[in-house]
Image 1 (spheres, helix red, strand yellow):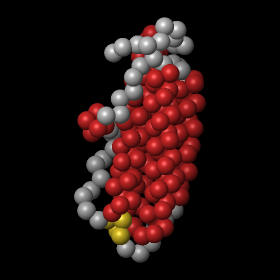
Image 2 (cartoon, helix red, strand yellow):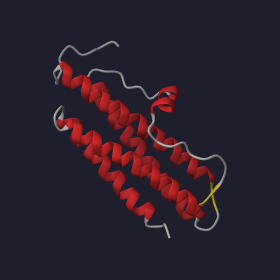
Image 3 (cartoon, rainbow, N blue to C red):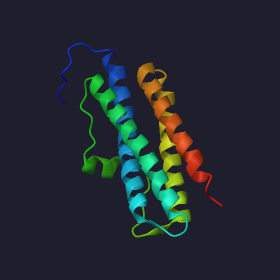
Length: 158
C-alpha cells in the first residue's frame, strides 16, 4: 500500500481503524448501487414505472455517497478499493435474486438492502466517534439520505 501524503490528519492507529470502517462502508454502498440497478432493470408489473423511477433516485444518491466515501479514504492517504472482486467478496448485502421481480417484491428486496446498509453505517458512525469525527460526519450525512430513501421505499409495502 503506497501512501502519497506526507502530512497526515490522523495518527497512524486512528487512520488504519478509520480507513477499515470507511472501506467496508464503500463496498456496501457500491453493492447497494449495483443491486439497485439490477432491481431497476428487472422490476415488472403494476407500479413498475414509479418503482423504476424511484430506484434511479436511490441509485444516484448511493453512487454519490460511494464517491464521497472513496474520496475520504483517499484524503486520509489510502487508496480506496471499489474493484468488482473486492465488492463481491466483502459486501455485507445479500445477493439480489436472478430474473424479474414484481414491484412489491422489488420494494421489499430494496428496502431490506437499504436497511442492511444503514445498520452497517450506523455501526461505523458509532466506531468513528472515537477515531475521526470528520469521517463520522460524512457517514451521518450518507445515512440520513439513505434513511429517507428507506422511508419512501418501504412506505409502498402493503
